[in-house]
Image (cartoon, rainbow, N blue to C red; front, top):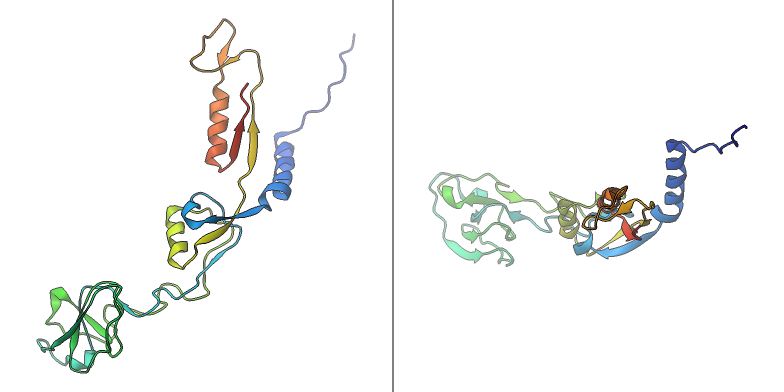
Length: 220
């Protein structure tokens, strides 16, 4: 007696092609907005564009003294200190022939163009020394993270540094996971003759979570 003809099985490549086609149509195109603080592991649907220059103004990259380079023609030149400028404080315009105490990250005051490190106060500065220029790191309007980027801790910090409080990301795929088979039991349950532990459930759930999916675990 001839065996009944079995339907042809789909190849793995065909299955993947069909699944990805559905994912592109129904999942990848779907987006949502999240707080930047909660964006770890999400995939950007829209690039992040800087809302400002970084740094937003000329600032110092060292603790030391800020001055006009032209006022220090030789090593050992002494200048009176007219003010103290910590980070977060905008100093007064610097008068010619004076210096100001300044700390890393503080804005360089108008009239100054160089910084001398506090460890080398006798040095002759060059114009622009230890000064980070406005927009040196990122310019206003520049894209700092492209669409399709998976957000890392560093990426979140970069987004925050350019003023992005919310991000447009792809919605997480929702996947239902269930196991079939009368032989399957969960770890911790009694293993009867013919039964095996449902290890695939743990592997598949872990892979889905690691890929950023929302998993509905329907059990066995």
